[in-house]
Length: 297
Ligand code: SF4
Image (cartoon, rainbow, N blue to C red; front, side, top):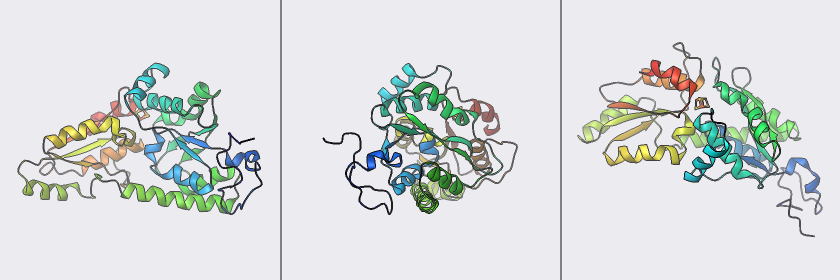
């Protein structure tokens, strides 16, 4: 009988696994597909998760890009009090229903040494289990860069999924490289010194004003959410520098929330002579932004 469950029965893609007897792979829990919702942590660590699971030979299913229907679905199925990105996560999980037996939802506790993440990100696996536990197995790991390097977390995740240390370590290294490549390839990311690039733009074109765009990656890099802002500014002839997520946080100031501190420190480096203004893309009901906005201003 044709195997409808396992998309690659007989040819295991796990590193060094070699060919398997037909159907053998179906019994190996490591080979079950894993879903990644195109929301929140997908944008916080671009390229990382997909490269990691790919390197392990685990088939990956990513939800479709956000569109108007995603937003409408989010409004219908998600908890009213969630912020918009958390609602969008629910709609992306809904999109994965029936396409994968398990989904990956990390518990993001900190994305930098000395910093903490938004508390909502720490509760995600629990919230997802509560709402989608009857549809998927929820694979999770604590991601706390304040205590443990990202590479070690990835190795632990690989071992938790049943891979041996060497295979998990190789996948972790590949994933970090994929993550680095993705961040460096971001086309409109700001240079280290936005003021310098701003000078060039202003002298080349009297019309071209330079603006600095800040926001959480899951708002700025979700094309459906941020492209209207970019298009409007482009139509006006303005140049936009996006905040560089790869900045090294200096630990200055009093903000302890990682993404908010990233924005706060970047703003402190701006030169008002060369930067015409700052545009913040924020989402409704964001507790962190509502508190940190006073610092930004
Ligand atoms: S930082 Fe704001 S937008 Fe992001 S998950 Fe937390 S509350 Fe939601």
